[in-house]
Length: 211
Image (cartoon, rainbow, N blue to C red; front, side, top):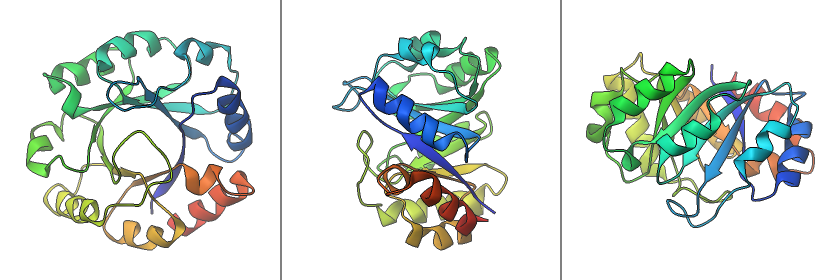
């Protein structure tokens, strides 16, 4: 069984609040994509706005930023954090960043770009709580899933069956069966949910397929 996690990527606080209200009734977890305009071209809404949003959802923060440590310091005391995911390509000492996040009592995942090899991350798989494989180049929703990432995930689960693995980017309902088959534990979806006529219904359909 895989779980589906809706992912919000927006420049607008108003859009963020609207999407949270739509999805919190059907999903306990929501991934919030944070972009700084440097690691990826676009920049998301001001993080201070998160403290004004009241929600029953718990947040997974996917940091698509040049300086993850700095952003972690802006987020750590939010009451509804589940975990923080940072890009291993952006830190010199991944172990220290994992410990930094764990020190605040949050889950710590590493995220990896499509071109990053499995060999580059194997030394950190058992220090982090999981690894999120990006199946698109980060920063924009609505892209096409890169099939070579599926092979990398398959090899990861063969070599490291106890490591928790997620995928993010380009996922549509026609991919769900294959993702389950290769052992993906968590499936992050953005436009497949929020671009649908009824996001809550779209999410429930994807979650049912992933069970």
